[in-house]
Every structure is written in C-alpha cells, then in structure tokens.
Length: 118
Image (tube, rainbow, N blue to C red):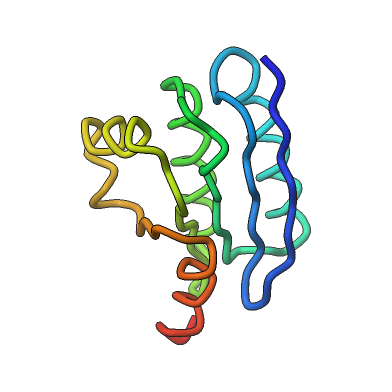
C-alpha cells in the first residue's frame, strides 16, 4: 500500500499531511518521516490525517511513539488534525482521544501551538 507524506513548514510547527491507508508497510513510511522531522529538531508537530481513511494498530504505535519522543521536550507535542470518523472511532476505542489533542482543521491545529504559548 502506497502512501504520500507531505511535510509543510507552518510556524510555529511542522505539519505532516498523510495521503493513503496506514496499513501494511505504510506505517513504516510514516515512522521514517516522523523520525526525520524529529531528527531535524522539530518537536511541535501536526499530523494531518484527512487523507488517511484507515489505520492499523501498527500506525497507532508509530503515532504514540512519535508523541512520546516530542513530548520529552518541554515545548514539544504531536497533535492530530482532520481524522476521519473511522479514525476517530479507532482512537476512541484505544483510549487515545484523552492522549491526543484533535482538531477539525489543519489551521486550528497549527494555531493551537500559538494559543497555548508553545
């Protein structure tokens, strides 16, 4: 399964927009993209999931792992934007809606870093 991950520098954070199902080998590609962004020193991240209609448990693991890494930095966080209803259901079932801040638009997610002083 192919996915496309587009990096968008949107101060005060970096957005990764995902296009494609996060199943099969796709979570590995997302993991590589997140690792590269974090290695570049970016710790305020928005993961835009509007183009990702589904996610396997391995995709959840990748997102949780990246969130732990960026949250180890005082101003770091990983926030989610525009997840599909199916994605929201998976996040809710896994108890992750209490862990992640979720926004209905990419712009709201980016602005949230300004709003909370991060």
